[in-house]
Amino acid sequence: MMLLIGIIAGLAAGIALAYFILTPLAVKKAKDELELQLKSAKQDSESIIKRAQEEADHLKKKALLEGREELHRLREEQEKDFKRDREELKQWEERISRREDNIDKKEEAIERTRQQLDIERARVEEMKEEAEKKLFSLADLSMEDAREIVLRRAEEIYEHDLAQKLKEMKDHYDEEGNRYAKWVIVNSVQRYAADYTGDITVSAVSLPSDEMKGRIIGREGRNIRAFEKLTGSDLVIDDTPEVVVVSCFNPLRRAIAKMTLDRLVEDGRIHPARIEEMYEKSKKEIYSEIKEAGQEALMKVGIPSMHPELVKLLGRLKFRTSYGQNVLQHSVEVAHLAALMASELGLNIDKAKRGAILHDIGKAIDHEVEGSHAIIGGEIAKRYGEKVQVVNMIQYHHGETEALTPEAVL
Image 1: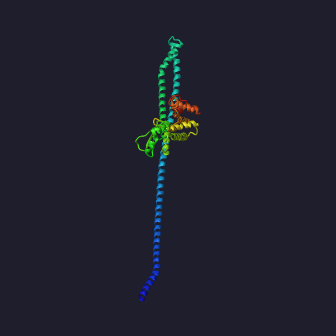
Image 2: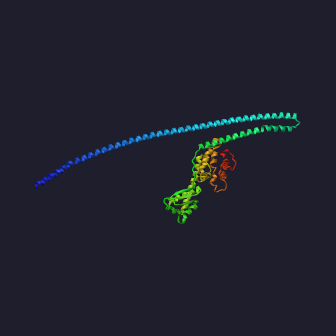
Image 3: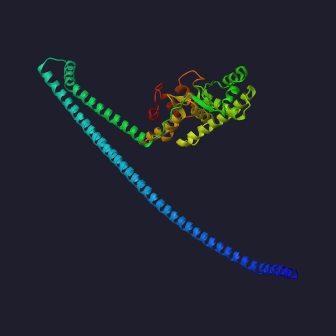
């Protein structure tokens, strides 16, 4: 029994001793393996970072190279365009120079013709005096009778030639004038190119859900009636999902109505009082936009100042169309073209731009006042301090008055 106990005690002591000896060794081994793994992972990460950095540097250099090549290509294209434009300008200058030379030569020819006519008239006078002497010697005629015969004969001989010459000169200068006018117009149009966009008479408003249509209509239609009466526009509510259409031939009213409906939909509270509140806010914002549009139009054409009321009326043309084109955009384009044509013809550029941008100003209120928009526009411009020449340009542009200046004809 004691032997068994001794054996068991020895085994226990051996196991304990082995534990205390082997455990630190296992821990050290695990620690060493972990350090090796960490070192390997660190080396791998450094390698990955290095490769990524090299790849990034490569891509950066490639992008810089491609950018330089694209910049070089764009510069070459720009140089080609500049060279082509310079060549075209040089050709136009040469054509103008040749045309001026031809005009000078023709003026010299006309002067020679005039001198020749003076010589012919002097010769006719000599012939007339000689004929008078012969008539007096050959016939028993009074001085008055003889003079009448001679004058009638001279008229018969030279009247047709003079009339034909004058007609040829008139036809020639009419043809030259028309050709030069066409050249000025074509050259001005080529120098100014603008986009054209036709306006429409409806605007769509997106809804978050079709349930909103019922709220817009309101109980027994009271909301839609209040909206249409207040804005002067029609609401088209059909089966199209999540869309309501604002319809109105007056673009200004349509813009205010659309903004009002957008705000009502966003707010969610739709009833007559709220409709009126949103309408007033939208109207105020649109009229502020009108003023900004007028000022922006003047800046585009380079007109530094104008009466504030004229600026507002000009801005209202943004919400007016004529033959499908926005009238404010049309007025700006006409001002640019008038300035280019005035430059070609040596006319007053500032006066041409001012009359051109205001030429349709009467359309801003022609539905409120009786009369043609040209006459109305001239009266408005005069009321707000525009000069007589500018007023005449506005009223002449449909031929309802006589042109006082060459700029009015533009």
